[in-house]
Length: 179
Image (tube, helix red, strand yellow):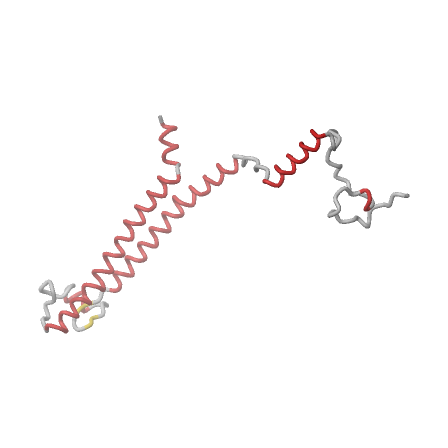
């Protein structure tokens, strides 16, 4: 039972889904803070400029007077809390980095180790090799080529006439055989 659960958890799909959920939750904070820090004050400024109503859409400017008097810049009396937005971005980046180095990176290494343990299946012969094998077998069956013809040894042919493959380059450094 535990082995089945372990196999389920170790599948890439489950880990990817979990990482996506955590990253999505962390990015929610960035979007929320962007809305609070920039979009709401920007809308409040537009309402103030268009209507002359200094209370904005909600009846009051976002943020308190103490916060506005501190390091938060104001445009038309409306505070833009860019520091909170930068804080949300840094929090998101730290969460993403921690998730990567504590979950994704180790899972990738584990998957790589598992792949190293498995030998890849031998490659299937190409169509050319299959065709040449069929031609050879047909020639052997027809009696045109002796059945004992085996591939030549790995040594280089010594002269042009000794070579069975005309595309094989001549080895000029090989000792010459007499004729």
